[in-house]
Length: 407
Ligand SMILES: Cc1cc2nc3c(=O)[nH]c(=O)nc-3n(C[C@H](O)[C@H](O)[C@H](O)COP(=O)(O)OP(=O)(O)OC[C@H]3O[C@@H](n4cnc5c(N)ncnc54)[C@H](O)[C@@H]3O)c2cc1C
Image 1 (cartoon, helix red, strand yellow):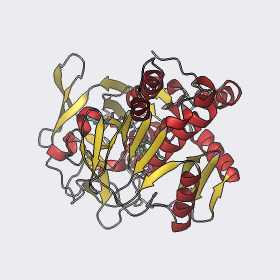
Image 2 (tube, helix red, strand yellow):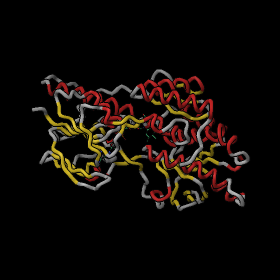
Image 3 (cartoon, rainbow, N blue to C red):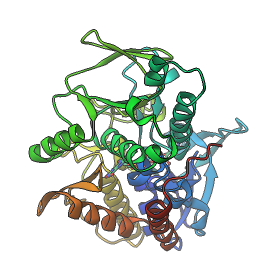
Image 4 (cartoon, rainbow, N blue to C red):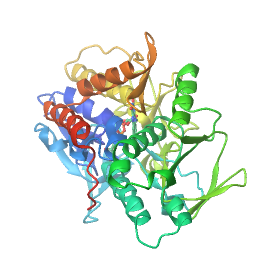
């Protein structure tokens, strides 16, 4: 009889593992509340309509050799070798048995227990989040266009605050800037003088994981783009219309996007698997959870004891691919080598057709790097359909501008 594998999640780690696993060797189930793989690297581009949502997702049911179950795993019963699940829609509870469990549930956005963040800030992790942001951005412009609106109200509606100077916050601010320059000026004439983008970062620089020169370059470009970067600043409280900063300042806002860091999911938090101070599950060099025979963890929620890797799509993808191949070898009784990571570097879009590349061989920025950024992501998109859709979206945006219809 084939051994039963359960994969938790449909993100980068899970999806690349699934693609490698041999269904002749294993009976494969995949459990996740999200019935699609999401190419998060291009998610910021969807928040203003540069790219459409469906162009960067891949339905998991396209993978015919695995059984997909739309549910959250709520707990892991290691002794009985089963997981307990709940369907988010019907709230039906059930359990599933496994011989091998692969945990790739990623992380969630960290609100640092700051008052009002969960209620009023917009997160950017899923398609649903990007969709909410897109609707809200347009609403801000429509609200500011209403008759009888005072100057002060216009300024408040059109003050966009981004919390977090990592790649997600920077890329969102960049996309918003492009939208304002390329579309708002034509579609909402007269409002451009009221718009303000403020990026708030707790550290002393943007893009902490990038080379110092690239971080400084981003600051220079953002200054030119009128993006007001406030480093060494913490938001201490959020209300419906206002944020409060630790230096005593406060700002009314139209939209607050929160991209200030990650933390463990409830499943990982509650589980009795070994975790480190960052609440990541500790694994060995074979990605097996320390002290467990048949439980593996990959991606953002895992960390190899003595070798922490960058928390990126690339890491999750490589670990997923390695694990899928290793498990095939194990089923055939072959020897498995430990996981070896090779860092290919990072890319980020910073607006105005400029990007950054922070690789071992090349550290560059500007227009040519932007072309490189686009070509890399086109090749990394998982299906031919997505590649064609994204190319088409870029072409459509270039020729006709972004669609500002709200629904
Ligand atoms: C907006 C944004 C932009 C990014 N841009 C880049 C980039 O340009 N380059 C880069 O390298 N990285 C980027 N990242 C980071 C990258 O997306 C992550 O490092 C990567 O997705 C991690 O993969 P993962 O498989 O660990 O988790 P994820 O891809 O986050 O997948 C987690 C999966 O687990 C599921 N899940 C959660 N809880 C449960 C549960 N209890 N039971 C079952 N399933 C569950 C989720 O629904 C999801 O399917 C970006 C992230 C975001 C949010």
